[in-house]
Length: 401
Image 1 (cartoon, rainbow, N blue to C red):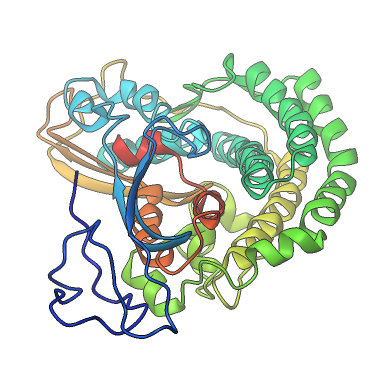
Image 2: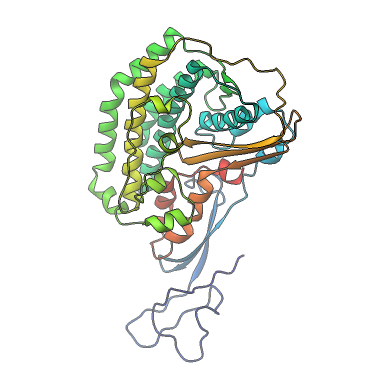
């Protein structure tokens, strides 16, 4: 059991003979002087590592004064997959299958980052049609991922109904992803040099059918959950991360944009077909759980906007460049990043000229977001802990890697 020390929380003046808060081990009763403050024994509570609401296998060690969180320690390592070390013993075209098992809610984005890093090393020019298909599938995957966040965030806040509606819309998108890639989660669709398969008329029809209803559904979702006064009371002003703190923790994605920093890899470091698309970057102002909610809802609307442009603007041509069956990039290194559903997902490769990477580094955006929990949990009620985990939208597969 880790010792958590209280260096900031002082419910009252200390009686003579007691230790200074910075020296007292956790679990020692705080005894204030006078009758204005209630003395309570601080409890150290384990949340997890099998808690059903932590979006993966996560452990929190919380020090509580009554129902108030005094200190929080995040303990990870329960879902370690060894992706980086495995990647150094796999050929380059196999990296995408490992990335699928990192952020398993946004497999297309992980595959794309790995493929782009390999293409940089090999100086491969990807056909225009493949770039547009990569963008289309990325935005479809983004909405499917955000639907899981939306539904589970409602559950974390006590709203059951919206989860069912979110899964309805997600299933329509997963059916499209399955038809195109052959898989519902571990897609293995984006390959160095292009993509696995083209759209068929049936798949295009399914996407257009989805587009005819999704705008109204998103409005309904936002009205039923975001328009609920009880939810607004649960999330507004809670878990605030200001701009400076968000940047200091290395946050990206909706968690950074919710704090008022309008950084988006698709716009600021454009890749695939994004330079040819029109879209806006939703940005919050205060950095609380409500801003993170509104930014992600805005992102889904922008993703729908980009899907429409992609489905109407995909050019003709090849979907795969001519690449060797066994990839042996020249010695060197590369870094490629994409705007995944959770922020900047990066892949750093170092090649020694062989058919396997000398070094494979995976930058997971959820890891940086999770670190910020230790900043925003102290001072909040215990009931807010799971809601705040949901508000930062983590996936433990890419945190432990």
